[in-house]
Length: 169
Image (cartoon, rainbow, N blue to C red; front, top):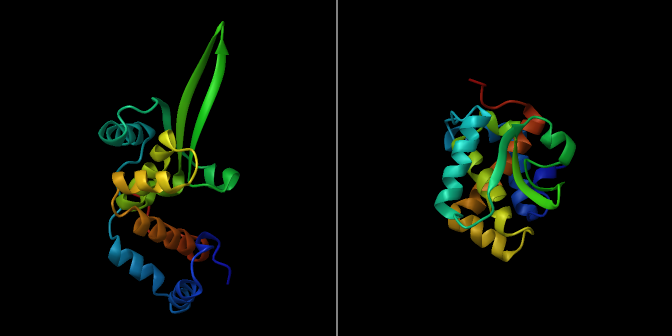
């Protein structure tokens, strides 16, 4: 069984995940560890949530002009979140805008998972590449970032194989 969200992890970890899938214990494990979903369902609420985190950790970074849930994101871009930098010429001026799109799969996810993906995308305002400085910034904003990233990958693996884990509210 191919675990596309977990490529790059060591074989013993992948073996444990495969065993949990076979024993059908992955879903109960995730539900026990993350029993609740968040209540940030609208683009307006998502924008307010992202801006509060940005204000707290990245006050000096570029402004965000748009923050939305995108239900086409994972299909089109093979991504869960997307930070784009759009440049437009308006008269003799060059206008630049930063936009953040969060995969709609996170509308019914635990609050920790939404926080992890938002932190990831906010970090791209300062660091474009996934380098040491990028992950340092992520762990500054969310100290449990690396564990959450792994758990999000487990969650996505579960969704890929079994379907919905949390019911839409």
